[in-house]
Image: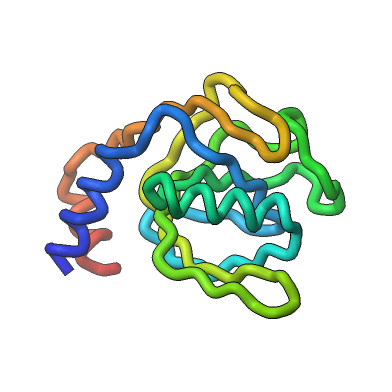
Amino acid sequence: MQKQKEKLIEEVKEIEKELHILPVKGTVVFPYLIIPLIITEQRYARLIDETLMGGKVIGLFSQKSPDKERPTEEDIYHIGTAGSILKMLRFPDGSVRFLVQGLSRIRITNFVKTDPYLVAQVDVIKDKVKRTVETEALTRNI
């Protein structure tokens, strides 16, 4: 468990300033959470392919309205999660299924590209945690 946590910390340190942005419908990806995602649109399948070729870290941001088919900068929340793609499977129907693990919370500072998918400059949001007797007790209880 400790080695896995150390590996995640190293990946967070290596988060690039510019990431491919994947709008996620109806869910929120949290740091350290492993979640399966399914993509049916070809432009997002291309986004996953290019992300895997470039280093496996992607920006995952929730959509404000899940019924929007082509979300723009205004249609996603600007605080999300950097995620590492663990595994990917391509199916004959054109869909892509992959496992992604949240690394760290990130904030969009500037959009670089909007076509065919979003690319943005991001900053890592550092967690501010005070070590107190109460937080230590809650952590051990969990």
